[in-house]
Length: 99
Image (cartoon, rainbow, N blue to C red; front, side, top):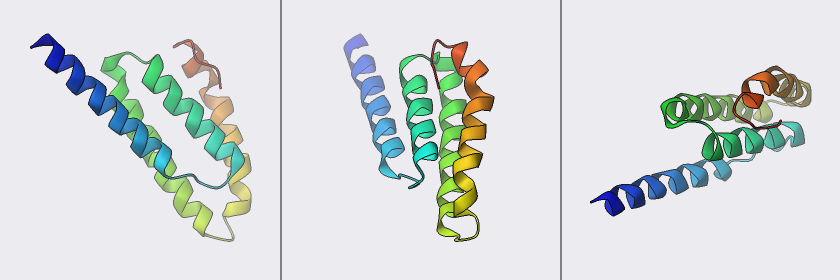
């Protein structure tokens, strides 16, 4: 029974990684930030906070993907993503992750 629970949890975690990696924004600072965010969630964030943080990164990716489609917004994304990374440094350092 315990083995089944562990295998199920592992499968769910791996499927989440596949979803995370599926959509690159196409802006280096954004893709770098999202990759580090997702790696931190997967490897260091306690289970109690994982769902909330996974939802947050999914919404962020969705918004940035939409903005990247807009020629007027795309040039601003690099700066926005760098700002987001700077703002999240303290949060992620609490989990032992670097941005």
